[in-house]
Image 1 (cartoon, rainbow, N blue to C red):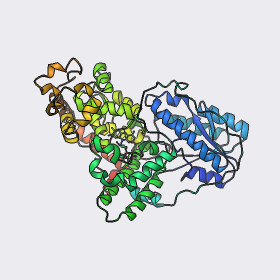
Image 2: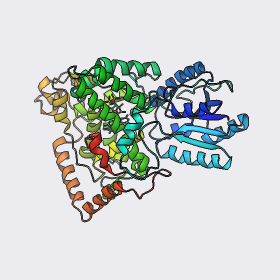
Image 3: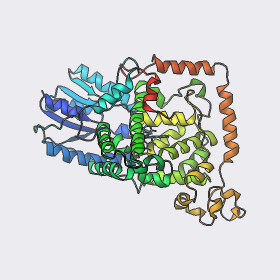
Image 4: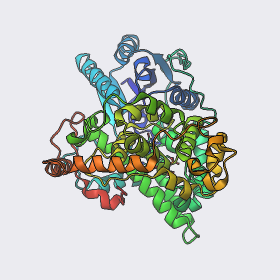
Length: 500
Ligand SMILES: Cc1cc2nc3c(=O)[nH]c(=O)nc-3n(C[C@H](O)[C@H](O)[C@H](O)COP(=O)(O)OP(=O)(O)OC[C@H]3O[C@@H](n4cnc5c(N)ncnc54)[C@H](O)[C@@H]3O)c2cc1C
């Protein structure tokens, strides 16, 4: 039986349940479809494509070694599949379940319709702890942990069926702007394995304490996110490698707490992707309806542009944004701060700045991203409001101002004591409004105003009842989900030690 294995966000051959399952039943054609419409979406960017293109080159090599090279086709998925069906007569598509954005959700429905109409079986398998179609969230963590503890899918030998063909298009051919991400992480399996090994053998020792400051996080965090997001590593192989490292480093200073924190985050990954799997509207609709029109849907363009360019006049915010623009990565706390400042101090709607951040992340993962953007913007109605003070964050995470000085060289003249608040320096006029902008808002006054607006909104009649209903909906899902899927109640949060 000839099967087509459709590679999506799973660009590897190791622990690839779809490839293993298809090969068990006969010959396999491995396919990657470059979909120009996907890359034209507002959350897609040139840096993400550059990373994927590098991973595809690697995947091609790996599949050649297994016996059947990768086919790469550019076009609309249904058209590509129809042409290949006419050419090869495949009868089955095997892929992993994809919890992507609204566009991939709609595309999958078209593909499912086409497959049904043409007598093609489409088998979609899980590749992580994210479950499709379970009735409720009871026992979710146990099932997720059991999946992770299971054996890796075996590496198949493939019989040659078809000649490899199709090139990897350039970013320009996909109309993607060159976004000059000079320090971007490089795609590919060797890079992923090197990072995992160095993290579990050395870099991760102080992970727990060093993850918060952008100065130490760059080295102390695993940096595996783009490799997990594009499936170069399977989440399960990372969990297995971490368990082995934990065993090996039993009793060694710092390791137990750090590896425990890391394991929690790997579980959060599944938890948040599960949320989008269950409630796809999270990408474009506020979880709490009362928060929908809280901020103007047409954002203040000047404020948004200042934030996006790293020119708000708030040094630590600008340094983090410029670092992200240059590297495609930022640590968790600073991502949360960028969102918090955009949503509260600048009072911008999350739907205006969320896609900007998504494009800047090489590791963009819709399930994590949209859940976090809504949580950090205070629109879920069921999470505590967390408003970051950018000056305090700068003083806490970059006390000597080294990070700010590296990324905001315009502040070279400003003495250390004022580097996080240059407007308080008596000689501020020498720099502000000349080399570096005045702050676009007074951060303390803007935070006070935002707090009052949020409190007023949370106090409106019916807000609490609606929040209770949302919590209830999460307990027993009734809304639209992906085909066959249900939302889950957060009963398993404790087991995942979520910091919400
Ligand atoms: C507003 C906002 C948007 C975010 N968008 C993304 C995104 O698009 N893609 C993405 O991978 N992460 C996202 N994160 C989560 C987190 O910031 C990154 O996963 C992390 O910084 C990646 O670096 P790392 O691989 O070194 O992580 P590590 O700290 O080494 O963690 C290991 C892995 O665990 C997962 N992980 C870590 N933190 C979280 C978390 N809080 N929630 C869920 N999973 C987590 C990631 O897969 C990560 O690679 C976002 C966070 C915020 C606040």
